[in-house]
Length: 265
Image (cartoon, rainbow, N blue to C red; front, side, top):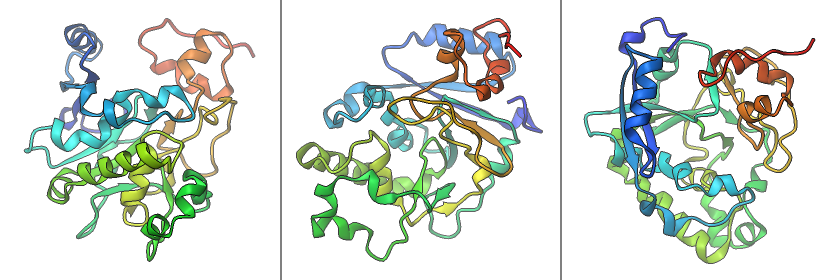
């Protein structure tokens, strides 16, 4: 909101757990951003609770982490395209540029791709040893992409019933254990190799470290439009514990719930 050239054209769709106090959330947002156009949507945990398998980090098992798969159902049909953003990031460029990314004639979503990542590591040996499963990626140049930043064409999503496609993989996961990492692998299974690529500047991810230790990390080389603390280490937790990583200082000015942090030289 702070960095966009036309904030009056930005509409926020906040997805909250059904157990959250919606009135308090609405009042907090309105007090912080009096001119913000927004709506809060309640996500029912029951929609996905029976499909969630335990992952390598318990935080990834939260039902709200799967809400991104249900945006086409949660949002009104008049909403044709959205930019999905996780809550552990700061966008330091005009979001209108990201929203305008062309998807071409057929693509459902756009995101930065990372083709140098070890794609096989996102799935178990059970998956790769089963030809009927591993052939899912045949004739697809499948690359890792981070689902915390996505431009999604909701009309195409609805027309292709992609929520059901994701749920089918989650149901198989309950029976066979084909991956270890929460809500990401079903997206890779459905979309990897068939998305519109976005410049890496729009998702400088991994600033929270890996999913086990959450150690400090540096920025990737190149320009930065979006800082994303994906991984175990979250900047607000490290700041509150007075054990910040160097890059957490970039988060601090945007933290509305705390007074300005001080940093030792």
